Image (cartoon, rainbow, N blue to C red; front, side):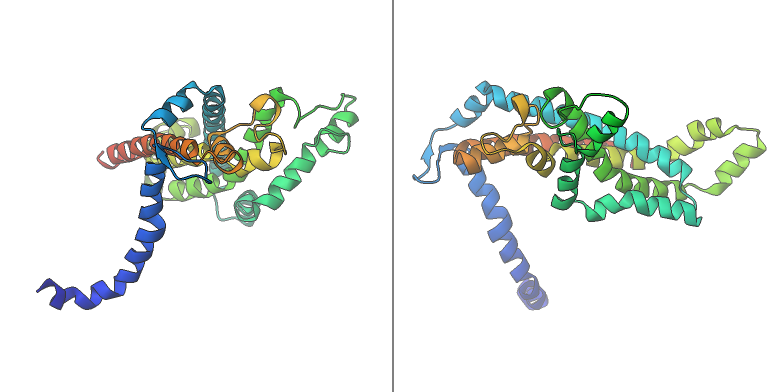
Length: 294
């Protein structure tokens, strides 16, 4: 009976589900199996249980990558959200100037990628011809090793990360601000409320779901950072930059899986990353669900 009623529809969607099973479900299940094996790409996988996870827990580079990723995620998330909100509050109208500002900040989201990171690598070059060092020379300061000094690694990566997501946050916040009824501000002005009071008691409470969405999705995206540290600090002998100060979880996974060919351990690292991302997503859904229920 079900086949007679929905058979044609099921045939139409069958190719999608087939491709999804082959290229989506099967790789995930295969990765879960490989995380429990000793597999170095050239030999057949050998089941070893949770030994890969125990090796990860004992690997100092893994914890360095986790700490670097957490610091990067926290810094980029906080700075990008705050700056995006400030820009949205000041450049959210339909005037041509404000539209041009929004376009200028949103361009990195469109024109980002390898080319943009290559430009940043020139800007932060440790030699005197790098733009940042040229500016330091104009101020009478000595050149800084922006890409060679561990103390500069996190600031440079955070600068690039904020630059790449700031325009997106700005656009989302502008959309959230425009969803707030203007009547609330009119009533507040009639009652003598200042702009600061309107921000605290009208804008931020009504913008809270947007703040939660931008914050948590930004955290998830920052946790998966790869090509910025890979292109800025990746070298022939190491992917972690000076003293592993640019080593992130995904670059650690790439290093163990595709350079050292320890695919079993890399699969275990991928599942640790997936578990952490699942936790962040769960927090996201709980917070958004709580806001939606109010």
